[in-house]
Each structure stands twice: as C-alpha cells, then as structure tokens.
Image 1 (tube, rainbow, N blue to C red):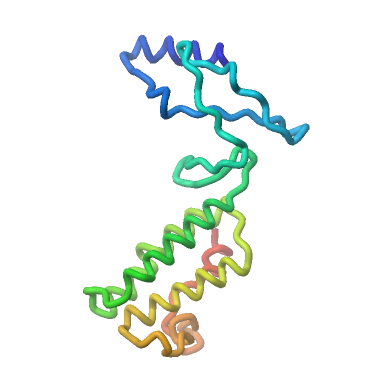
Image 2: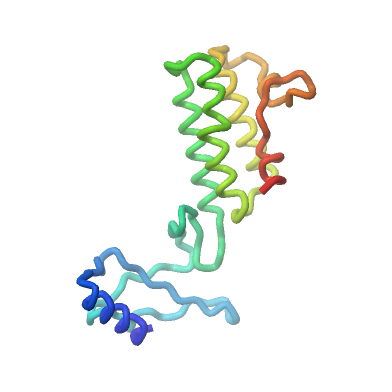
Length: 172
C-alpha cells in the first residue's frame, strides 16, 4: 500500500496537486479470515492516514456502505431523508398537484438510486411506502387522520398513487 501511495504522491507532485491527508482514511480487511488488518504503517509522504473500521460506513459514489459491503447505513439515510421530506410537506407552499408531483420527481430517484445496490427489507420498504402515502395526504392538505389508501392505491384500483417502493425495487 505504501508503494502505491508513493506513486500517488509522485503523480500529485507532477500535477501540482496536494492531498488533504487529514481527510484521507485507510481500511484493510481480510475477507478469507473475516478480520480487519492493521493499517498503522500505511503512510502518505510520511504522514499516517486515519484508520477506517470495516464496520464504519463511508460515502462512495453517493452511497453509504462499509468495506465489507454492508448497506444498512444507506437504507437508514434514505429513510431519514424521506422522514425529513415528510415533515416539510406539512403546510407546503405548493398547489396540491405540485406537492404531489414532488414525490415521483424528487423523492423516488433517491430510493431508486439506492435500491439497486442496497439490501432493503420488506419492513423498510413498507415504512417508505407509508411515508409516501403520508406525503400524498399532506400534499393534498388533508388531516393526519385521513385514510391513506387513495395515496398508496394504484390508478388501476381507483387510487392516485404513483409507483410504490415495491414496484420501483422490482424495476431496478
């Protein structure tokens, strides 16, 4: 690893770039023995890099995952984002149609980007499905106690719902 980092340093010097070593992390994992490897000797220009545990999620290409491939942090992030969006739907300054159209245009892509590589349980997708139904009610400025069924029932069955997380997952 140090040889590789020496080449990176050489290239960075040639290109006139500097690495922010305090932002760099290193992780090492032996998948055969299912154990982390020591990274204390890994250095960049003599500076030790911060150790990243195999259980710590890191954001890579917009997804949160661990070195071992665990994507539970990504699922938690998406659910948290949707919960946050649901609170913003309360009394939104949009017409009902604008608010309702935000769900497939702004929120579905967050889920569909994640679902192709993340492990989602049926329970987690049901939570997401319910949140989208709640956002539908709020977009139409209905009370919290109003039945969610019209917003989670497809058009073919008399509802106004866009695709559910289950359908979107199947399409991914």
